[in-house]
Length: 261
Image (tube, rainbow, N blue to C red):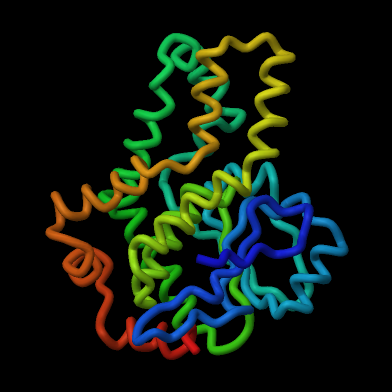
């Protein structure tokens, strides 16, 4: 599996989904689908790179609070959509979460892991989250040309969740989708190290730091939580797409026509 990492330095976890093999052995087109972390600190040089790359739409998966506190830049010629994947405000490990949950992060080494599993399960089950995924797919189906960038804060959880469904609809096999999801661990190594060093300098406990590391990591267990929840509660991915997301063969074929070579 070859991962197409974008040559930009001021955006976390920037990747083009182009190159993966999908339905009927057709490749996902490059310059069409970008998955990234937050872009609020993007440099002018990287902005220009994305404009030249074909950027036409940005979909922000973060909460309204996150989007207000760290707003996306207004890039000329680019249409912006705020579609919070979750109806909860903030993100695990974010500033507000650390203020509210600092005690439990110091008491239980595994609380971060448990909370992440719950969040992934909620993304599958909650009506708001399902509606957000469908809205994103509709935007993609109505983008005939140009590059769509979608992102959350680290480009890992919410972005990874949405990517699972996009790639599956394009016919990419689940193992490739899993490996693409897990690749965030490599992409975020330096980010986690810098973050952990700051926590260490602030005299945070080992238990707290362990929780922060898991909150900034991708995990097979989180990916499997999605698949198991879909299987147990909805009868499988195909049924989930049809009954919960309202995905029709027409929409699926439209996406394949637009995003596969």
